[in-house]
Image 1: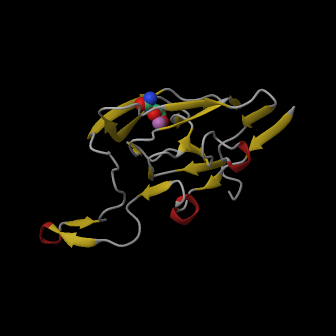
Image 2 (image 1 turned 45 degrees about the vertical axis):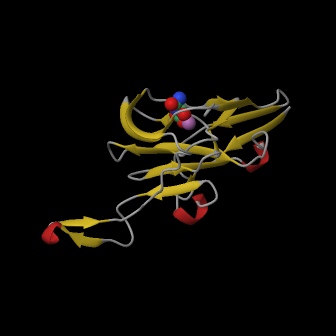
Length: 169
Ligand SMILES: NC(=O)N[C@@H](O)C(=O)O
Ligand code: NI
């Protein structure tokens, strides 16, 4: 049995770029509304492939750690963005892979005060909220075609998330 114990790394736009975009009130902005508001413009782009982009609220139960990761999913027809309604930490787990998620490319990110927008087709684990029941705004795509591709890892690999504090803390 091959064991993979995932260690979180702090989320940055450059580290996440091949998987999607980071949404935050950091970086370039410009004043609008007579200077009463700063616009952090176009943090992410919604991919919808002629479907509709919708906004939902996910009320997420906290995950208990350690936890086993047995599957990943992707949305081939649209992006999926999550933005937390508070600044408590949560986790984002993604990986590469053409026809199936590649466990050797798994990346676990610890996230606080930022959102993420998965590119269409990015392998990810469903929402990994922590510590308490929490709300997230979600922007994703509905419409024709199958927009959910789930894939289980093979039984000869055991993937674990043991903790959520990033190892640089
Ligand atoms: N099922 C659903 O809408 N959510 C997942 O896609 C997820 O990534 O959390
Ligand atoms: Ni998803």
